[in-house]
Amino acid sequence: MSENWTELATTLGIKVITWTAEECVIEMPTRDVRQPYGVLHGGINGVGVEHAGSLLAHSNAPEGKIAVGTEMSVSHLAPNRSDRVRARATVIKAGRSTFTTLVDITDAAGNLTASGRLTCVYITP
Image (cartoon, rainbow, N blue to C red; front, top):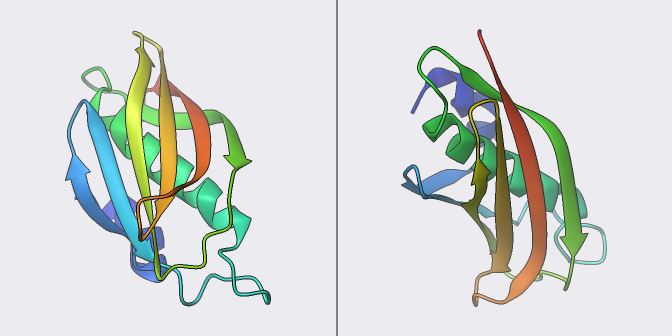
């Protein structure tokens, strides 16, 4: 993994499970990212969407380009009280200058807890 992706991943304990041009799956523990009520902080769902989606977009970037996020939306569907969160990004549309991905977020039991969409543009670094 490129060093550019490791700082946030290391801080939050994010592990890449699968990373191909078709999908990216990441996982992270939830013990230190909960609200006072014992449920996962919703911002972590946003991190999952952005991180998994950006890695997937990066895998599809044209030669000499990098992907940067321009728009993200997240729907929180159910509370996550489990010990981990998993984000699975899949391709919605891969264009020459933009990339859009769907990211589903699940808890340790595989229950869907959030869903989001990320759009990236490709730029020259």
